[in-house]
Length: 423
Ligand SMILES: Cc1cc2nc3c(=O)[nH]c(=O)nc-3n(C[C@H](O)[C@H](O)[C@H](O)COP(=O)(O)OP(=O)(O)OC[C@H]3O[C@@H](n4cnc5c(N)ncnc54)[C@H](O)[C@@H]3O)c2cc1C
Image 1 (cartoon, rainbow, N blue to C red):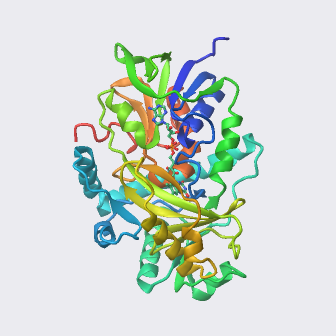
Image 2: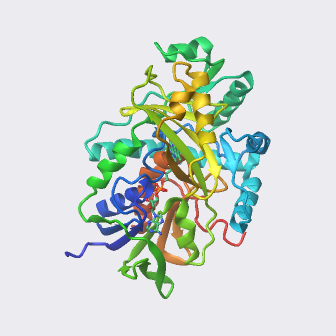
Image 3: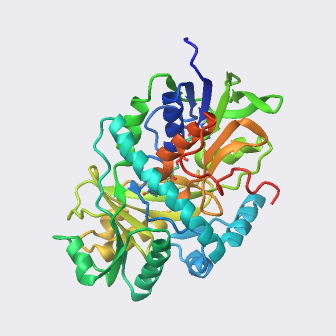
């Protein structure tokens, strides 16, 4: 094989973040090997059946004042959008403690401009990616936060005011204005908020096209589970696979989604990430066709009109990724959908095949993007939580910037993978 100008980069994980990293590194002159534990392409990792929303509006982190009051009553309702599987797990306790410490006005104020900058670059990176893959650009019809209650509407308006501080455009809608967004569709809402700059596209279609059209110099190896590292002084020389083989490299990227902490631990790094499981169902023959994506505020359910059908997704179960699907939570999603869009029947939605995926959730609502002080030729790209589809493409560009020693196109302050080490 011809030597590449920069060397050999090994990326662990072929979800949206790993694909993006492999793509950007290969365009930057690296020979890239992308390793994934899955046995073949198009497998249903978190990056495939998600809601497909590209959300520059999402600048307020999950950890925010008031989040505990809202979550506590959800914990007792089996159909609610939030659940923590009780278990004696020190990492879960540590994560919960850091989440709690982050739910402050000062943290929100610090995080707003960081997420805003990331999302602006993230939306642009999606457009550029579509161009490279010869796909249409993402749909840009915005996102409506749909509120079934006055309390939900108040909450949505407050969040819009906070987001406006970071420069996010938002328009408050009354019930008549909401109805005007959905001509020919029955929609029950007391009001809403429209974020005009959000976009969407089919995540599965994008992922499959991307896997098939990686730039020259990048190859994917399926069935390749990374389990350990071989060190060479301060740096890493190779990653060891479950089957005993080794893949040597000059640079390494850890992009294993919710499973990233396992490999980080092998480098002596505790990386707080919990698996935040969610579900989606897709109605391929919907009774009505809404055209603008929505989030149903009270039920925390996303609705996205996709070429393959109308998708409803939701639920955040802080639980091991391999837990079986909980039908009560699918029912909660279906009921919330039918409450707002009565032409969609809850029973029909709850009977659809269920897709599930595990979000990699950090406690402070910011992803981990950066090189490690303890192993400078290793970078982490993980922990994007509810925003990984939106921020995947730009994360890849940032990883390429880091390994080229260029100033990253978005400031990475606050995203350091070792920010909780020792805390
Ligand atoms: C219901 C739902 C709806 C969502 N909607 C949206 C949305 O609308 N917009 C948005 O921006 N985000 C959304 N998300 C979040 C988004 O899906 C995730 O943040 C994103 O997919 C995470 O991507 P990733 O590449 O980090 O992880 P993954 O997609 O999980 O990929 C990680 C890959 O690493 C591999 N791997 C792990 N460990 C190893 C190992 N040791 N060796 C080799 N390979 C390994 C896995 O096989 C996997 O393929 C949603 C998520 C859910 C669940």
